[in-house]
Image (cartoon, rainbow, N blue to C red; front, top):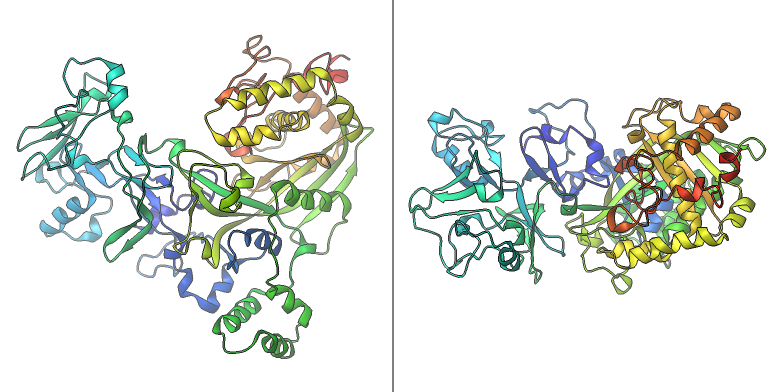
Length: 628
């Protein structure tokens, strides 16, 4: 697989939508990202220090699920690529789905067969990528990939059994021409005969009708025996999962698999439900780091792993040799009881740090606290963050259904989902390294007036609207929606909706499009704030966001403008009076016209929003501003 295909977006290797196990569309074909164990980190030893990202607070949190975890390693980003001298560490991938067809001659076969045909034609494999047809009349036409895949709740993914698709059982009703009984099709789906292929000399064609744009207009046809079948009812096709794990790459020429008792469902390869990355992010706090260099950490790890010298002697020897205090070394090597840290508790450390600490000497972070109680209605403080450091790490992924952030690191006994968390490593959850991305940016931490907020959230109408969303969530299809709604409060609804309205307004004044802004919510009994930030890799980090804090009257006008803009939605009065809209009916007065942001900006998938809590003239948090 050419490395060039993976250069187009480093951030996609770890994000909410991409990462190990995800299908990424390139300019030529779609590929599945392989486990980072195949990227070359294991060959580095001491040179691994160049890739280590230091955040000991995050590392300690992850050890509850990854007890042997030693380091977070950065995903390489290369500005140029020399094919004759490739870098030691580079992301790996393989083509997926595996089945391709030629748009010229319509031949349909899997990748291995196309590759063998290319070799048989005495052509160099170096020129096979992207896959091409060997038919002379096709003039090495680029092959098209099939767009359907099968996934299961345990996280496996594989191709449909295309070699048997045109060989149907007598009981199959989906492939009879003129049969429009959709009810019967939905109940059964296509029924294939796996006892044999359609004929001994199978030669499949993938034909798309120009007149019929439905699935019944796509046919799998054998050129030899003339047996054919269309794709009608394909989304109702089910089979026992094959347990394929293409993201682990090949071992002795075969892709990894494992026994699986789940039943698969068919999806389009670009569907969101094919992949959900379980990613955790952490804001860097200098005071909670261990002051050891990457080189020191690698050397200590190697000494411990060798098992030749007792730990106490290593500490004594290394302290004398390197002039490092024993306490610092012991702090790094400590292996005491690790406790599970809920996400809100983890965030509270960040929240309290920014509100209670002064600017540190560490140059990796720069901030200033601003009292705005008398200048911006509804807020007590702002934190102007000129330099912010964030590390994001992918721990695992699921298919078919996402999980909530607190379930990412939960042990199996407390895990409530039917979908399985698949590790991003071949070593499963015993891995010693995890892939991560380090980003620098800027932001503003808005802290609401706690006294005003406490009074507001006791209002009967406010509580009633929150209960409507919780009731809607009780009948939601996804378990994550129900779990998140269990702890939903008026405070969280308000702060989340306010975050969206401010981000939408900042697009006009900060120099950043909304898609480059991201929210981080700090909501609990002890927290009442929201961080809006922009990081490098989006639109750089330009200073246009944090510098808004230099002019509080202007920032007040921006917030007032966001509030007034929320009073007028092009979908009103339908949106304003809604008792449930969006996925699972989990939004009330919130739609694309007034409140929703790009998916990359929102922590909660554009759900749990209600602008009426801010702007209603009787109980809205900003009713005094609206009624003036």
